[in-house]
Image (cartoon, rainbow, N blue to C red; front, side, top):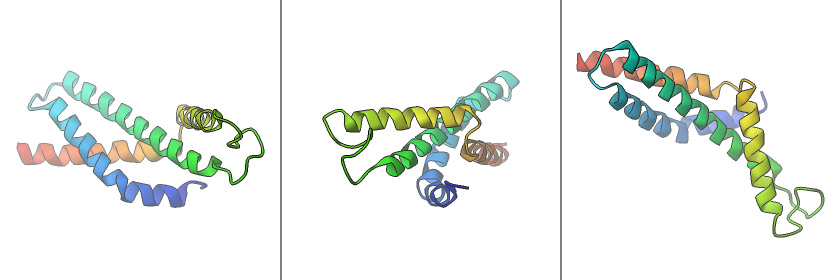
Length: 125
């Protein structure tokens, strides 16, 4: 997999902190209510947060890959708009990758958030 080394380092470092924060947000959204509507809303919120995380991660990874040394080509820093164009392009690439199924980071983050929430639910009961 192309992003496997990057995914491992980011998911372990920054990812754990972000996943923990997202899980706390989801927990507070569910609260003490055990209704299925609240749980469904919390799961939808967690799913959106996990896809947003994957999109952000891919955007940062693609940004590092698209940085060039020289000023040649369409992504070179040959003017004031080169950096802006590159950032918009990498953001769009990341969004399209996530829309087409992503690289699996969102699914892993979502599953981990659900595990954390189930564990927290068992402690509260």
